[in-house]
Image (tube, rainbow, N blue to C red):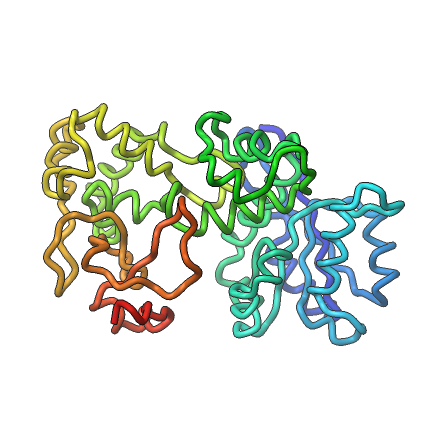
Length: 367
């Protein structure tokens, strides 16, 4: 396997703290397709806004990590991130900064979470990393940083044609791209910088269920409880066999190395090919019975309804419990109205009252 480096610049006025965190992440060797990537993080203490722009314009890097506060300077991370994004988007600038992933970091979880829901923050930052979590999750964080960087450095798309650019980034043909997606993003013959494409895909297709679904929802639609499967070695092996069978429905576009997703419609189509039955017309008991028959499975079990529910027509999950849920028995979560290709997210009534459920607000019309 070819060895490569992925270089981030960590900009922080607390140089000692940043270096201690960077040391945990540095030199982690990440397997990526046919390469081994070594993550390298260089810490830079900012002096002024202008000098920082000048410094990084002369450096080689694949991504930026910004401490939110930068207390010893007269600017904060969002201001600098905006300058980087604007520079990358302006093809006429004398000094044009690279279009790279920008990661926000902080020791304050409330601040990190506030930027997760803030529109300005969503338009500027690819990810938010809490410093206190690095010692326990450094391997996951290192893999995430490499995946983000590769989305930018290994992408060559026709930026002036949003439809072709989006389909290439998503790993599908132009004809497979939902017209509503390309129309919502932008019109033909308009230049968009790479970060706008990647942030749009992450926020509107990967993070929101709809055209793409996560592993828990994929399992639920087949009639299977992923949390239950993971508690049993044999069921886990059979679940891996099912995933292999549906491999053609896997999402392989940008950020797929960090986000495991499946194309919902392709799952439906392949289930029909495999079983000669429409997945939407039968309930979980029949779906699982057909899978066991066609794939010679012995141990995989039908997911039981969440306590207080009765329906086996699973199509979503309870976000608090991660268990299969019929949307008709769910409570919609309060969040921006889904776009035409997106689905609502739900809580079960039982899940609403759990510690995880308190993180979500139920849509008032469902109370």
